[in-house]
Structures are given as C-alpha cells and as structure tokens.
Length: 271
Image 1 (cartoon, rainbow, N blue to C red):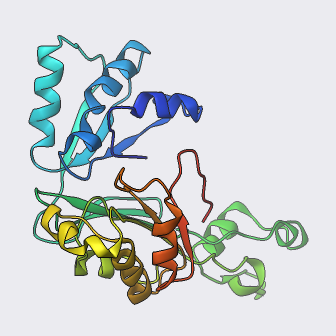
Image 2: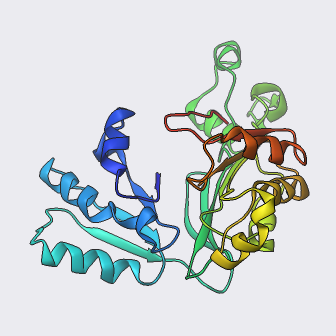
C-alpha cells in the first residue's frame, strides 16, 4: 500500500529498496501537487518495468481524469489495467475488505476535496497450536473447524475445545492517516483507540490562525486529536519549511500527548 505520491516518490521508493511492482494499491489524499504529481510517472515506470497485473488507485473524484489525461498526453500506453476507486465525500466508506483487512476513506477539512484513510486488520481465523495438531492427531476437517472458532466433537464422543487447541486471537490493528486537514471530528472518530495515527502538523500553535486559513493543523492540535481518540502512538509530519528545528513541533505536541514521533524519511513502525 502506498499513501500519496508527490514529486519524489520514485526516488523515495528506490532509496528504501521498495520494489515498485510490490505495490498493490495507491491511496491519494487530495489533488495538491505535493501529494499527487509523482503518480503518473510512477505508473509509467511500473509499465516500463513490465507490470502486468492490475493496479488499484483510491482517491478524490478528480483523480481518475487527471491520471488518464497525463498518461494520454505523454503517450504512455499501459500493458496493465488501472482500476480507480473514488472516495465518498459524505462520510466514512469501506473501499476494500478482504482476508481480515478493511480499508476505509473519510472526508477531512482541507481547502479542496480531501480524505484520510483508516487501515484496520483483524485475523480472520484462529491459529491451531502445532503441538495440539500432533498430540490430538487432528484431521484437516477438524483443523478447519477449529480455525473457525468451533469445538470439534468426534464420533467416539471426544470433545476438542477450540479454546484449548487454538492460540488466542491477536488484538486487531489499526493505522490512521490524516492527509492534509484542519482538526476535525472525522479524524478523531476514525482514530478511536488506534495503534498508530499519522497527523499533519504544519505549524506551531502560534500560527493557529494561519493553519486554519490554509486548511492545516498545528502540532498542538494534532496532539489534542490523538489524546481525545486515545491512540497508542502519534506520528506528526508535513512541517512548514520555516521550522529549521523540527523538535520544537515535537515538544509542543508532547505538552499535550506523550507518545509523539517526528516523521522522518525511511522510518519504519511495526504494529
């Protein structure tokens, strides 16, 4: 999954050694250049590298005509299919659900049509303990039944309890990406009890008025959203270039919410 594709997206992917062809879906938050200008070029490079399987692109309503026009004018003739999924401006909308994963878009408050994304995963099945498979000589049909959370009753009357044979299901995981936005209830609601929230923090709080005028948030406002939503960890990013010392933004956020990390290129987080 790739979220947003600004001008340097291909260089960034190469520096992090992420193969272009591993990307299955791209999520665009809004149509400002620093979030979307790199997308046509990335698609073209995927084509040159021999991609054949479809690419699914999620985003605002204007995303599809923009991409198709750019590919047409640059005479980029794709050998693979592009499928577009338009976000719903009326509220949270599930745009993908499969194998325990659910991805939803939700409208946020920026100067133009803009969206955040919630990534939620819950293991669809239980895992049967390997030792129990051997000790109980479980048959394939019994394993399938146990993985679904059902007890197994054998013909001889033996009852195999699911709780005994299976590992406890891991807690669900949730990551929320705010995109560019003023503080809004949509982000707060989507982030409730999330493991990780990325929230833009363009300004310090003394620029709160400017943040509102430009459709952005301050570091303090981002932290307030995280605190209200009881998230486990907050990543802040999208800093104005006026701040040479980005730790000032982290300090301001930590005055409200303790678990704050500054977004830096190449950082990895495991949920």
